[in-house]
Amino acid sequence: MQSRLWWKAALLILTLAITLLLPWWLGGAGTFTAVIAFPLPLLALMVALAVICWNLNAARLRLMLDGRAGRLGQGGALAIEMSSKFALCATPAGGGGVATLLWLLARRGYPPAQASAIFLVDQLADMLFFSLMLGVLVSLSMSGLASWPHQTLVEASLAALLLALVVFAVVIVWLPWLLRHVSPPPFVGSGPRRWMTRRLLRCRRTLASTLALPKGVLMAIFALCCLHWLARYSLLYLAVLGVGGGADWAWTFLVQMLAMAASQLSVLPGGAGAAEVSVGALLLPLMAREQAAAAVIVWRLVSYHLYLVAGAPVFVAQVVGWWRTRANQSSPRP
Image (cartoon, rainbow, N blue to C red; front, side, top):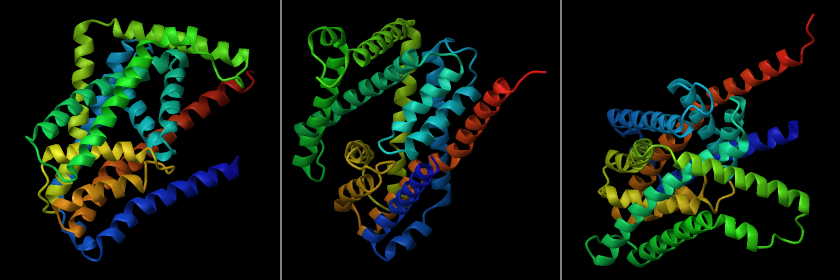
């Protein structure tokens, strides 16, 4: 157990080093000067946007739960959001984020199978937003109204992302049919198969009940989703402005979407390495090398390192609270 913790800590330290040193190496000697010269008011605005994003997601979680996990105020929802985001950023492929969300909701008496449906609703709202944005960006690119670097690569990437979103949506809609007609792999036994089927069906029922919320609540959930991503994906644009670059907002939004897809190829937490290289490469045609590298460093400081630094104490507090509760429950009563 201890060796696993040391291995995870070493992996996280390697990730932090890569996210800072890789852009520095790619940008050259002028990167340090560009980072130091970054305007502090603009950096404060970026931090404020990150805090707003946490609160928007916390409010969205409260609406999705609709009182089904007990009384949950903004502070409690914010603690769940920050703990989940910390785990997301600290684990490979972000797998710890979902597990932490399910664990924290289970502590409030909300079953994991139903909590996974809440996560699915959250992902569906994200999918709808990105599908709409992808449609707009694809239309701008293919109609010639917007001319971006690497035009052919951009169009192919946008089309692939849009296709992936459509396939995922179709799988969700046809889930009952798939469970009835698609045979599982031969190495999966009947016991695990029944267990997974029950969980999927419970998840789908909770998803249906969540989607059956009043239309006003669903619209509010989607509005909070849109505000979150518009604010979150404005961070790179502000970083580019701070280093004196000339990329427009739509291009930096698209760059972050493509970087998010590329980061899935990295085995390190936070998509380290792939995110920095992809963003830096897409910014290079529009600005100097040291400017692009400095923009990537500042962007990662606010969109990744800040999530780790601010979320770690909240996550530790949640774990300590759980440990104390468990110790009190297991201690013999006089």
